[in-house]
Length: 220
Image (cartoon, rainbow, N blue to C red; front, side, top):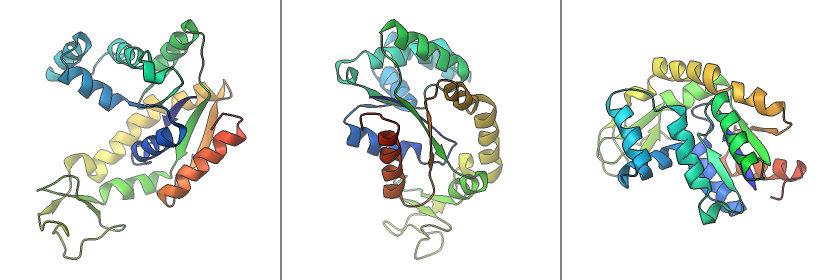
């Protein structure tokens, strides 16, 4: 089964991608993991990507596409995969289609996690991270610490990352609307898009996604 997962920042794509990939027994392929793996292994693609990143420039689509192609050709992806963070724009989506056609395969579904914009802002801007351990995450509304400004686990100071400020979140949403959201219309033209309401408990969102895939006739 071959799936693309899309949705705005804060929609829970990373969480749902991990859970769905496990349920469907296919590898979760995320752009972030691809970049980290190639850079840490110092592959030619990793070195190339790092040269752009070190210069403060965006990594060109062709480098990202090459990394994704290499990963999708690994033995564990023969039976399918779940793509998270790729494609990020229409040109990448077109390149993915061309790549899949060359292999005689195609996508089964594009899962669109739908979250209201103000909820996205609330989810991200309300996050507070422990300075001692970034895995200790709290929220002004959804997971308040027992003591204001202090981590329940280790007592470390809680802070808001620069990327999580409301202004930054709204800018990230603008980028999503202009660059990534158009791929939804692109895939709607192919009849692949399945929209999933991503509000509520994590388990409920996962269940909705799996049920929607079954309704669409995908082998979930």
